[in-house]
Image (cartoon, rainbow, N blue to C red):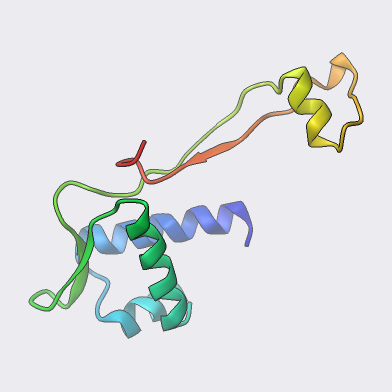
Length: 112
C-alpha cells in the first residue's frame, strides 16, 4: 500500500469514528472498501497503540472513549551523511545529494 493511500485510510477511519458514522463492522469495512477481517486487524493494531476504540451498540458505531484520535504528520529534514550512506546500501552520495528528505509518519497523536 502506498504511503498516501495509508494516510488517507487512517484519516477516513479517524473521521468516521469521531463522527460516530462507522455503522456496524460490515458497514464500516464497506465504507473503507476493505474486508471485515482486515477491519478487525486494523482496529486491533490501533488499539495496541493505545487508542481507546470501542463499539457503541446504542449509536451502532465505533467511537473513541475520551479525547483520542489519529493525527498523521509528515515532515522532512535533510539526511545526515550516515543516513544517506545507509539508504542506498552503503554506497556514498556526494554532498550535492543532501537535499534528500527523511520522512517520518507519526500516529496516533495520543501516543506521541
